[in-house]
Amino acid sequence: MKNFFTNSTSIWKVLPLLCAMFIIGCGDDEDPMTTPGGGGNTDAPIASFQFEVSMDNYQQVTFSNFSQNAVDYEWSFGDGNTSTEESPVHTYASAGAFTVTLKASNADGDSAEKSETVNITDPNSQLTVLAGQESKTWYLLREGVALGVGPAVGDNQWWSFGGVTPLAERPCILDDSYTFHRDGTFEFNSNGTLFVDATANGGWIINGEDAEGCRDESDPGVWGDNADREAFANGGDYTYDLDNPNSTLTLNGAGAYIGLCNKTPAGDNTLPIQNKTYTINTLVEGGIADTMNISLAGDGFAWNFYLVSYPNESDLPAIPTEVPVFGEDLPDASPDAMSISFAADDDSERVLLDTIFSLSTVDFAIDDPAGSGEKVGQFNRTGEQFQELQFQTSPDKFDINFENLTTVSLDVYIPSSNDYSGALTTNVIIGFADFSQTAQWWTDNREFVTDGSTIPMDTWTTITYDLNDVNAGAGTYALYDRDDLDMIYINIGGTNHTDTGTFYIRNLSFE
Image (tube, rainbow, N blue to C red; front, side, top):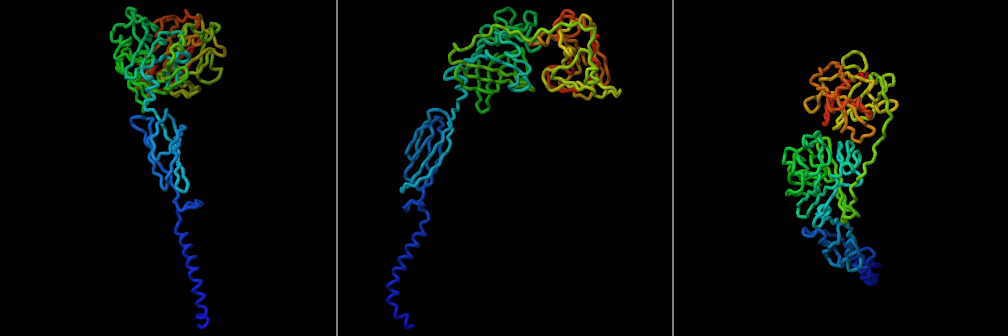
């Protein structure tokens, strides 16, 4: 105890210094928000903002600043412009995607950044490309494929104008113009000519003739026996509706159309309808020309139209006038017999005939469905719109002169197990055409047709035709009068529909 009291004076001298050190240490521990290395007592900044595009002006954007612990702001709008306002309003010069960055700083100079992408989109961009500021005129493409048809949008494998059919063969389609006005009105100008399709494709009779081709609209009888078709000509109170979200274009008013007047999503029609809705696949501005690809899509098919608009009308190409030579003229042959049995997929079962690529197919050496134990061919009608099983001479291809042949026969087996409740039929066709030198061989073909109702089901039936019978089926010429026919085809189940079916065939024979 003595020692303690003896040194008490020294203890009281040291105690204030210890307390001062203790207080300074506690103060540092209670200031965790000070920016590391900042050298000050200000809280670290947090950069935050939101933005809103004006409903009245899609190019104007209002930025709302929600930054914390900040006193200075630097905005970079991504288009080369900047601002130091707290919550600026900025107007972009054009549409586009812009990266906006906000740098928020506190009083000590410490900073934080936040970036957001602002998409400036013209809500009327498609309308501007389609109709311009006041109006814009479009034409079908005069270089390349102008229009076509196939099993799907963008697929023109069945036929194309500018591909299968040369553009110069149908100039009356290419001189049509389609003008869209900004106020929603639509103008069609046929320039006095009209393409009339064959009646089999929705065309009409002119002066008693089924005459496909270009027609002057002033010709007597060009509208047939129905004045309603005149709506396909110039005039009419036409309007259009552009649906941006769904990318569709609807033309309103009887006769308003693009490309071909009788094409609709429901199929070909001879009379005008009140509106047509096209799917817009592409609609873009270009350098010399703007481009538009639209489609009329139906059940299992699509018509595709390719259009251009030239800001400088003098850049519009002239309508082609020269028809290129298609294919080749095959050497002639006069066989005494031709046949293919389908019992085996080898040369032993063929005499001068073999299959070529077709949309209908055949499987060789299939068990006879009648149970004979023999092998036959299975004819597969696929889901394509137009199809047949095609043949040419083999191993070399020839134009066939039929002078030494009198009949053609085919054994067919029609199963009752197919679904005939729709468009599928039991009709059987054996046809002939110039495949190698005629781009549209189906416009000048010869067919022998058997009504399927006369063919019993679930048994073999032999169908025989006299090659010189000009009244059997479609086409009015005798095969003996032709020396350019090089393709033979079989169609079972009907055409111009997508219903499938399975049939059996054997012994296609010419004698």
